[in-house]
Length: 303
Image (cartoon, rainbow, N blue to C red; front, top):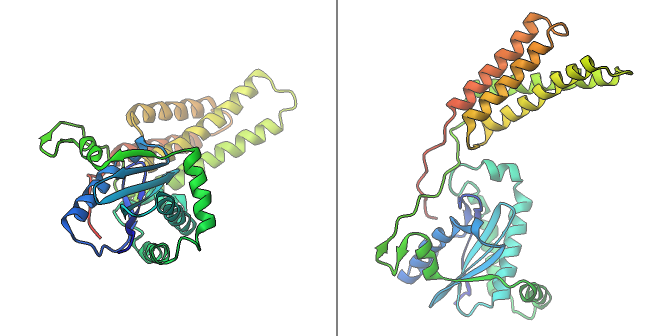
């Protein structure tokens, strides 16, 4: 029987499954272990980089770095060093195949399902190559585990964390927050383009004014700041539109205020139409930020 039975790649911050190996085992104990793996995936951010959840017949091992974690269900006979060497190999293969932007913007489960073939190949290699052939890599992992041992859980701990005590009594826990946003609209893309253009204009004018101010007086410092502060505000508006942030309304109001005051201060260096253009873009961006809501949590799907 193979020692590494199942593996998957998940996003650490929300437990979203990104890819997984094909599942050939359908025993009740294995399916129960799969359920507990999904529960543990939602709480990976609470644990250090490496950890194991031990059960009667199967162990769950996980290894995470930055926002990507690899998880595996292994038989009890599988050496811990071998399991973590496998997870490290899968992690390197995945991060070499997909950049952090693609991973961060993934909005549906198993968005990188084509990576399944690579997981299967790595899994086959570790299940069929003798430990003697992997001796050097296993020794390196073993040294790391001795220096920094992985956190050890039991599979029952995952049930308690998910709100189940002794398999019967349910305790109330708040659901894990879901930070996936609604899809970007065409008007939202337009607001991003205009906002980036306004930010670039503010940055260019601010740097140009600073370079040509040989004797910087108080008024010129104010003009430079009046260009650079709206530049920062425009960039932050783009961030707020693309990514979820708590207290969005308050942040949007402050950014809009900074942009309006900065452009009003520049009256004389900009004509009325230029000022109105920058303020109109700021209002459009603010509206787009406030109307783009969090997406309802999608149900997980099996592989």
